[in-house]
Length: 87
Image (cartoon, rainbow, N blue to C red; front, side, top):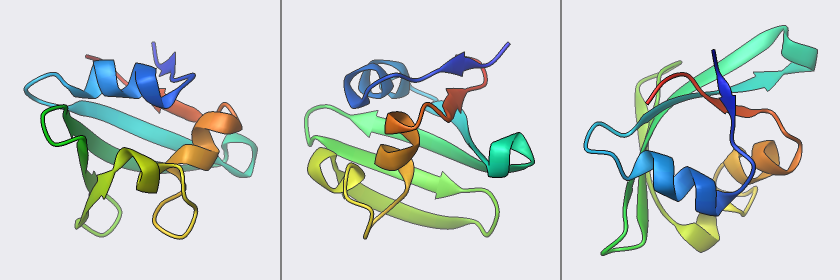
């Protein structure tokens, strides 16, 4: 069962796992999903993200994660539509 991610702090805890966290963002009322692998490295305060839709990657600091010009993950957390599949 997917688990709702409620904050960047919670995402950091989950994504610190060696394998990262398989996550998805629900869009259009759940009709569309954007899947991602998110890994967090606390010693660098860095998120490493693989976007499964196009295999693109991103390296973002925590501050950038909350900024829409870099990613929609921060907005997804605020709108309660970021979920972790299993961890």
